[in-house]
Structures are given as structure tokens and as C-alpha cells.
Length: 45
Image 1 (spheres, rainbow, N blue to C red):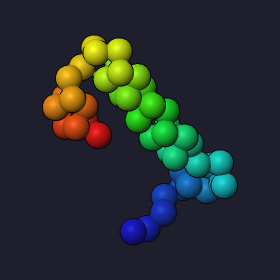
Image 2: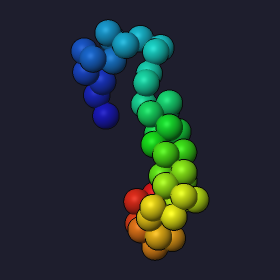
Image 3: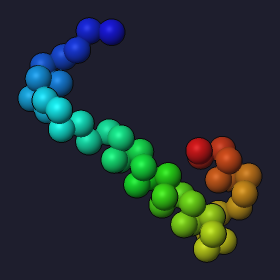
Image 4: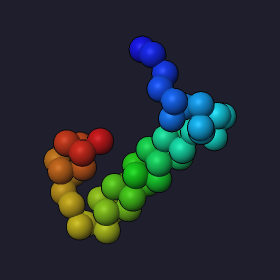
């Protein structure tokens, strides 16, 4: 896959891994607080 100019602007500061980690933590928190079911959690992750 060819990298775009956006990668050049970001350099080594790639926000994607942090975003994925925070999203997964948020979904787990929703699951543990019983706001979503186990099945919904599995579909989202």
C-alpha cells in the first residue's frame, strides 16, 4: 500500500494505535457497566 502525504505530516506520531486502544477500553467499560450485552460487545470488537 502506498503511503499518502498525511503519513509524511504525522511522521512517527501515529494516533491510530492509541485510538484503537481507547475505543476497545470504552467498549469494555460499556460491557462491564451492562450498557451493552456480551453479544453486542463481541460484534463491535
